[in-house]
Length: 321
Length: 280
Image 1 (cartoon, chains in turn brown, red):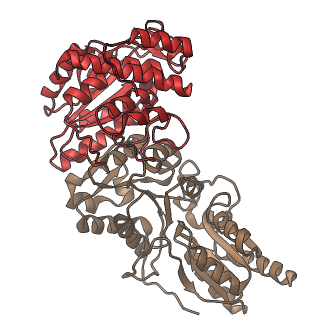
Image 2: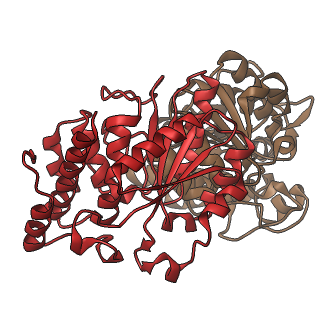
Image 3: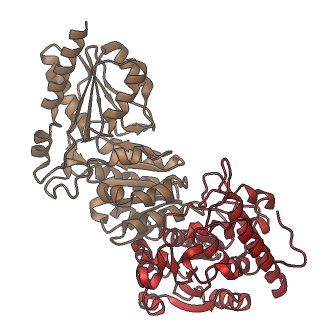
């Protein structure tokens, strides 16, 4: 089993800020837009270096999506920045008509996704955004797991032609992926190989899955851990290859169990290899105020809940035998 | 192009509109007929544009139709100015057509740069395109058209606030003030109030014109062009008759989204007859 350690903790949104700056240096067509959340989105460095390529739209997210769509006409690559709630649910129709249906090369970048936004509470803790975005034809949906992966993903989507939803978060979390990684859209990352169960995790749940894997090893369960950062298009091959080996799956995500990564995996299993599966996700509810750690525990999204799901799914698998 | 030639084209376009809507028994003839003179003036006289279509439109003037339901007039004008074969107009709203009910880029119809239909989004998109032109040091202009009922959408006012603040002065917008919307007169459904005062208060350079007088339309558009690049976005309040050119379609919201039957088509075409029209 590969051992993951970390020397520092950082927020994924800072990875976005670093990636945006680098993408801006590599391509002069990269422009950024923000709806009055520059500090929260960590866009300051980009704005400082490229002031003329930044558009402050004020608290007007619908207008921001439209302007971003229009800016692609003439060849710009707009990155919009706001909280995940205001980047999706609030502007769904603008994204649907002006960006997705119009096939515009806009990168919708969304911070403060999920419960780990914390104390602001449920008005801001969107748990439905992955579902909303993945249902749009042609939309690429990415949810990154640490600073380095978020930075690499931000650079990668600038080089990809087409609409993208990039989701990241607020809290500081361990930095455990390779700083020099090449981010491949649509390609799963094998975090740890194993034989007993497949844990497929995305976003903040990847670190929880790694912690769960270590605890499981202590009780003799050899878990395979896969990171799906690109929820759409989904790396079906990687999931199916793992499941052929392990015979059961746990999905783990900071999202409603309806419409998220788990449902995408379930569709693949139903069609190709219907093995037992359990979800680690929010059970169709809104969030509430609290610290990120408290919320992850209360809503069943931490390493202990992954372990419980693993035990349950393996029991189902063994009963089938 | 001389005024009488433009008048002739406008009549031809109005013939296309009623025939297209009749053929598929759906679509929006009222607003299309009302805005015919504007679109003819833009595409045949005022705008610098290239029918050999390129999405990015570098060096060209761009047009965005925000009230996408008046697609018949836009499709006819695009076809008649060489973007695609006129004969394709007969596929309007039919299966496998590039001429969708509302304009879209999805089927790659030349001339269309963004989908529209869900109202209120076109002004934001046009502002984005205008910002890119400035970044690219492209001195082309961006034109838009909106319905007056469309102003009830909140996003319009987000955009209305943004453009003057950011000195988007390569933008010439037009509102089709016909006073009608699906459920009735705008004054009954939701009053728009003093539009001139509203847009001026938001910081726009506001002009007015009679949208069914081609000479006035051309004169005002040229005036608007002369006032571009002076620090303010330009808004033209365009008074029109919904259904202009067909007497029984005029001045009522009833023809907003209704297709003529055979007898009504015949009556309309009689009113729109010219000496040498060339229907598709």
